[in-house]
Length: 298
Image (cartoon, rainbow, N blue to C red):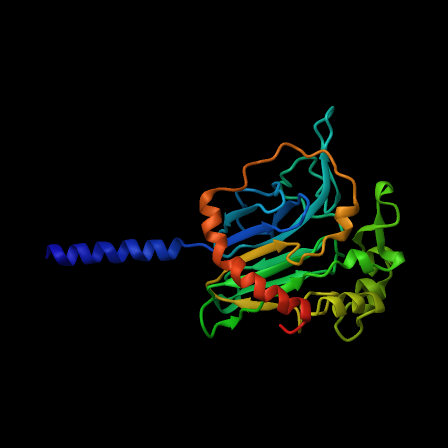
């Protein structure tokens, strides 16, 4: 009888552990400069313990995600904090909160976006890297430990420095960097017309087609969303996986290296020993996967 009670107790404990287990996001900065990730939860999903933080070069942070979470993650660059007012702002990806925490505000375009819906239809995670709102920093998503036979647990993202090949009409520049782009607008943001924004008479997959500008993004980054109806080659699914979101997964960071250093706001704690252990295996996978993303083979 005692053994039966113990077994029942252990079953309940295991059930509770499994039932409350969550997906882990590891956010990694391999850029040669500081990136300030921003996080935004979708409507009706649980808030995160952080909505923005600082990641110095070579730093990482682990985030335990709520079950059935949906939302997006992006990188803010060229940020500083005004010494007089304390107002925090970024040249690219700014969320307008005036703080390191975005507190429910999204990224001002152009910004590269990592988008997730966890435990969605058929208990699958849906994820993508989107350039629909433009581009500011290389980014990839690498799933780790997904269930065999469930979904299509592919690496996705854009490891290419699109700022260096951004068309003149889409460039975002700052005075200190001259004509060097620090971000690249979408055609919708640059021109605002229905055919580029997939709006009005162009608001369906049949009427809104890739443009020369979205085609440039797609050629450079075949697995990333390049325009609103680019679902077929840009949305991926996985089940039971953890995810590594990496800024600057390639060695290319020409644009930001050429920009002058900016005053850095007081850093928040983003790195610890447990994070190092957790990142070790995914980064091993990342090294191979990024080379595949770069070559367009995956």
